Length: 219
Image (cartoon, rainbow, N blue to C red; front, side, top):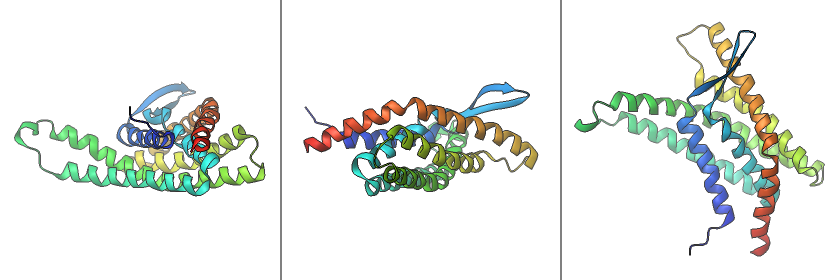
């Protein structure tokens, strides 16, 4: 029976979250309408907080440099998805797939824009999360993991949400006012949902740290 190393599995889950957010994150769904203000969120809302949780777990167990390496690896994956999406959509289709070529190109051209927006946003927020979490870890002397994790997530995901949503969904054929209303309707609930998801997933941080430390001690 093949033995799966825990850290390898954590990295695989991290890459899974990245792939889901890049390939499927271009779709938004309605949440609610409050005082005529339409609140929506990306379908990637369930996996994005897990990416930051995974990074925090790695910082806690293996230190800042290992977490920074994980973030850089994620950025490379996003970059490769962007490049390959551009390549795939520009290659000519064989006769059998001519009919579906427009739909294929539409989907993956959107994914390319999502990847470019995500690359920019995550390049900033990923390192910011590591920085904030590590500073809080030193300031609190390794205590209050729940507080460090959530504060780091709240700050990093705030900037990630603004940069990503603006770059991914700004419509150049519409007015600034129209864009502002639409983007604000995504940014505000999306960030709030991320914060809520971060709080809900707090037990996963403790479980992940204990799980990863178990392998480290056994090594």
